[in-house]
Length: 282
Image (cartoon, rainbow, N blue to C red):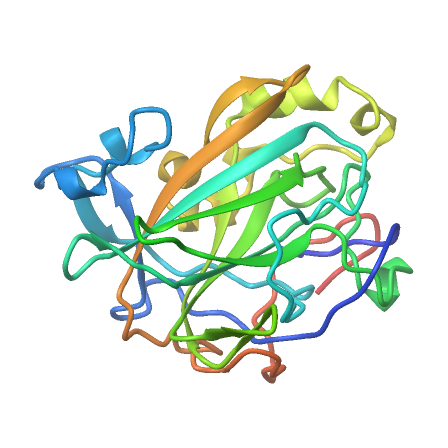
């Protein structure tokens, strides 16, 4: 499938690696249901722990494609909206060491996604070169949380609604930028179709006439773990959402395709998503 997109909006950044393969040994994990122990140390408070139910076990989940539009943003920032219109979305992402079932302090959460019109920033094919909207990096705190302020992602034909994500381990913040470290997880976050429908009924999303691809029709959704890869949302399309999810990683893992590439380095031969979107592919 293709993770494509044309154009729109503001600012700039840089570029980074490709993905891990499905099932890459020892690569990344997500906390999901099933047998296992509940780790009380993971619970910060009931409102923030999407994981209170998810933290019943730590289990490996397949890596999924990075897609063609990854950019290595070395600037650490919490608010990545850059005035982009859309339903407010505050993401609270927790990173846990699957070996110890303990929060990881200082992991870098790196996200990127399209705008309400289905367009990615800093992509020549989208007409958005040197713009940096809806891309950003945040470090996790002592309880393993990173919080990013964005807007609900739009959609485009060929892919279900999603947010791309990497977890970098061992990097250091220097002068507001991230340097060094390695990638331990490349993944994608998804949303319940009921939330997608409520958001896309509103402006500016409603002006996008591209055919929607549902989770059930997107093979990457299945590869990512299906419903376990969905962000848990509180709030509404009219007022905005707080989204929560817990990811587990093996901090020493370096996924097969690009996981060892450092900040600011573009990896070769990306593994792309299949399919097409409005004539875009990659």
